[in-house]
Image (cartoon, rainbow, N blue to C red; front, side, top):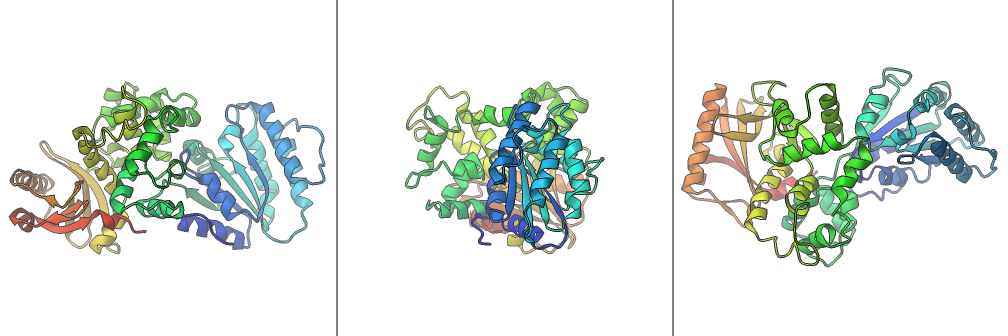
Length: 473
């Protein structure tokens, strides 16, 4: 089975392992819109899939059952049924009969895509699906059932953590995240697009590692030209993507958008109490549910505060495109060709790149640990806030060291100035005093092209990393 999927090595191996197992498999795949879930499953299982159904967005129960009927007719060469099933119990019974008619002893895949859209109110879809798995599919060692959805919180609550008929039935799960920098670079290479790592990094910090977005890039265009065409020209596919993403994922996306907008206004993140204050979303179960939905979809991430366990955790916006959209696209008065090319060298974008580079580093902590030679050392990651200082990434290690990571984006070697050296000293002293730690504190500076050595760097920096260290698996 040749793999035509760029990156996704672990996920592809997991899916292939299900084909080679000697047991029935129920696999849940979830992740945000446009991240490549359907593409991954179709490519890995293109030779084994015997039935595929994709839910209809905003379809009611009759729509969904009609859709099922048409999908089954495509796969069932005998065209066994003329009428649309009247219930999901009947629909799954028809699917069972169809699978029974396949006499092959090889593993067979049933792929149900966008399952949350199928589970409409009062449809009893989940009841019927649970019955299908428990009474039929779980008794067939030749069957792999893959359920997939972009509404990640629904998938987690109703499939992965199901407390009813599917409790502990999931055999494998995949939370598909956007590409890493390494995977993005590989994907672009597959598309025939050759950028330097510096330009790949700038592109990644603008639209993120979303495969669907990367597919819009045009070979031979510079990164700035690509951003112009995607985000600023009249029919640019990412000009309205912000609204489209949330509308497709959530029934009432107003709270989700309000929280995203509040987080986009600060580089240091917000506590839960601050989110309530800044977003206008009131405390309670709705807020908890909204935050969970955003986290499961990968739009936000929580960072534990050093010495405070979960209390005082910091929430940060974790989506590059959302940050770029809210800063530069939404309220831009200029539109059309060359809009971005004329803005790309402005001070506002330069400052924003520094913030976005910090996010890129926080998404690649395993790569940072590998570059530091501590991948095998037990460690925990934290953020820290003092009265006059903040540290976005602390790596608290079991070998009596804490790496205090500073992340700086620049177009050349980074130079520690006298004033910045003073800030670093104050930050390190404040952290040592506030934390009371007796561990060694190693200042680790991560920059685009490395650090220009001077008296300040030699005095303060214990370890330096270049951005290319982020481009590994």
